[in-house]
Length: 112
Image 1 (cartoon, rainbow, N blue to C red):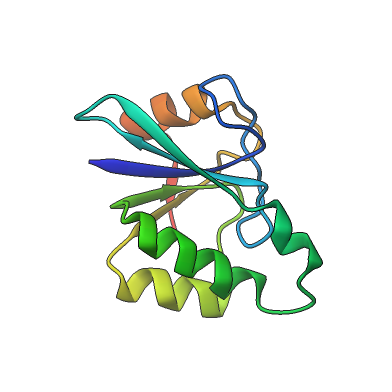
Image 2 (cartoon, rainbow, N blue to C red):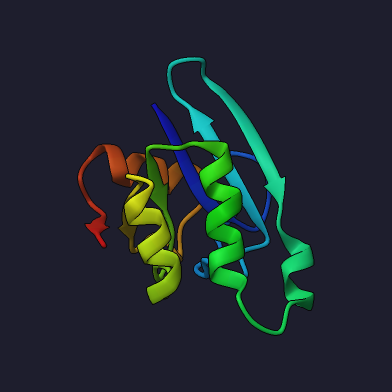
C-alpha cells in the first residue's frame, strides 16, 4: 500500500506539514517495498489560487491509497481526492512522518 504524507521534509524524522494545498513536500511511502518517493511542492507558494486542486492532481499522479495530513484538504481538493478513491486521515499536523505513520497503523488518526 502507498501512503502519502504532507511534510516539511523527505525523511522519516521530517515534521509533518499541517497544510494540504500548500504543503512543502508530498512524501509517499510504499510499505510493501519499504521505499519513499517524494515531490517538492514548494513552488505552489507562488500560486494565488487553486493550490489545493493542483496538489490533489500531483497526489493523484503518485497514486497512493491513503493520505495523512494535518488539517485536511479544502472542498475542491477533497472532492478530487474522494473521486480518486484516496482515503484521507487528519490530525497528524504536530507529528513527524514516522509518528504519523505509527498513529495511522494504530488507528489514532481521524478519517476525514
